Image (cartoon, rainbow, N blue to C red; front, top):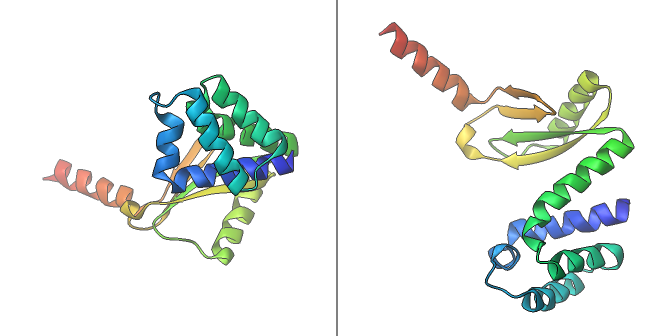
Length: 158
């Protein structure tokens, strides 16, 4: 299970880094045969094989490769549930240090009672602070949101 998750994570990283791969995955213009040939070459180069490669090829053969990002997300959720982990989506303005990531994990573990896996996304538009989504709960301490709140308060006062 861990090996498949690691390989799917690697494929997901390739997908987010390559506009060409995104186009191959999402575009209905490519036939299943073309997608399968291209995908096979990518999987070989990325050293993704076995169950993971076979699964991705089945998605391709059945013309469902466009859904691969959702499939990977669902698989991660199943693995986390099986392991008793929680997953938090964290948006930050700039890359966090390992020390800050560890502190965040400890803080979230104290809230959930579970080990927390962080999906960190960097979005400079939030200016500062962070946005944490854990299950149905969301904490938005971004500077952008605070500034917008002040702006609305000033409009109402004026």
